[in-house]
Image (cartoon, rainbow, N blue to C red):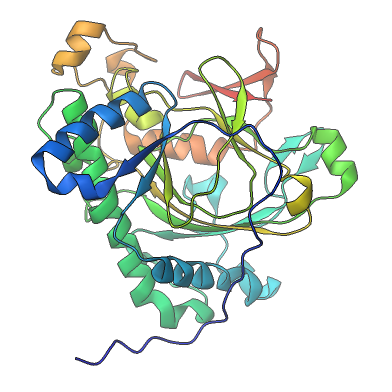
Amino acid sequence: MPGLVVPEVPHYVHPPPTKENLDFADLAVIDLEKYKTPEGKAQLVEDVRNAMTTAGFFYVINHGFTQDQTDRIFDIANLPFAHVNDEDKQKYIAHIKETGSYQGYKLRQYWHIDAGVRDQLEHYNIHHDVTKREHPEILRPFMPEIDAFSRHNHFNVMFPILRLLALGLELPEDTFVNQHDFDAPSDGWIRFMKYYPRTEEDEQKTKNVWLKGHTDFGSLTMLWSQPVSALQIMTPSGQWKWVKHIPNAMVVNTGEALEFLSGGYYKGTIHRVVQPPADQRNVPRLGAFYFALTNDDVKLTPLTESPVLQRVGITRRFKDEDAPTMGEWRKGRASAYGQTTLHDSKKKGVQEEFINGVVVRHYN
């Protein structure tokens, strides 16, 4: 059978990985090839549970995409930035503050970072159901591939991880899967994102921080690894450590929704983005992500039927009767981020805001 003919796309060339001796985090590597056997799956339950109750981040390999397929996605990811002019970008702008949804463009300088400095990153966000809205003309020939990418992330990567996480709580393995119905009202999305170098003045004002330390508000964030070092995680001991690039791997972390549902057992990990090391300082940083959220109507209360939670106890961020749905939490978090006035916490280097009555912290 002849191969599928796909449209041509300019090849995006990543810069080489940094040669600097950075303090990299020691993160678990989850090999999804093991998921295919009962013995391997049982081991992965333990490995994922350990990763998510300690570092909160892990790598995924053997996820079903070849290096060539991953390279192709990054080629496509660059199109909405390098091949759409500013006037056309405005036609597909995301009305984040008004709708609490990222669908469309978030342009540069929308978020306030610190000391009057605004961000230098833009992203184009696509609902996991790519037919939900119209896209820039340059992307339209590639929508079948973007749709396949979305479904691969959702069904072939996210679902196995969610099953492992449910088994780690000694729950039926489809507990979390059933809360992430691809066709139900929800707002999970693909994100193509590009960071641009900043001025030295901005770097000094923000102490080289591009995005303050934060936790994601969804269930899982899946980042396709790329070579420009900038992502850091906060370890349980309070240290910032870099996340290392592994070719054709994914970097996965939990968000607040999963933390709430697991009664604090799986914690949303604090992470930030900083200026890259000196040998990568003057190059853009292109990213491809999949942000998983539960169905909008899922109430974010702990799964108290979990035998694990019954043994270790439950940490609640709000009373069950006050718990928001995923849709309410997503709208509150997305609309507020980078737009509200943060207040200093009693803890040094921490600022706070209140969303739906819950304290949301930002770490600097």
